Image 1 (cartoon, rainbow, N blue to C red):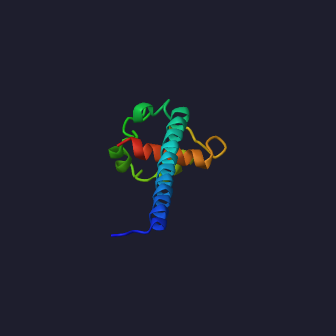
Image 2 (spheres, rainbow, N blue to C red; image 1 turned 90 degrees about the vertical axis):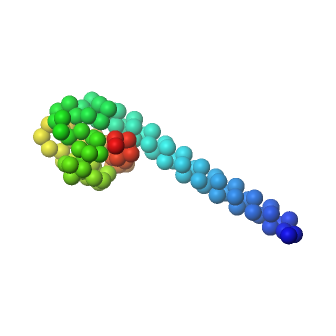
Length: 113
């Protein structure tokens, strides 16, 4: 099969662009995860060290406990951060802006299985 040279050069450009996009996306996801971990350590780890809970042992960040307590999504975690129950510090938007809070919630979902 004889493929025109123009086509093969263009094909290489397309593959390179796709590779760059996938790499940038993966790097962005990783950077978000690192930022979520840093924010978690700053705001949450004092009470939730290693995903536990020093105040209420039945409300750890483990997936099993989250599901049992009706916390199944990042949005559920955000709601708790903004209006927690007794024993947990309230994190309003001034303390933890929305973007940072979202990264924390995503980090919790991805990390504590």
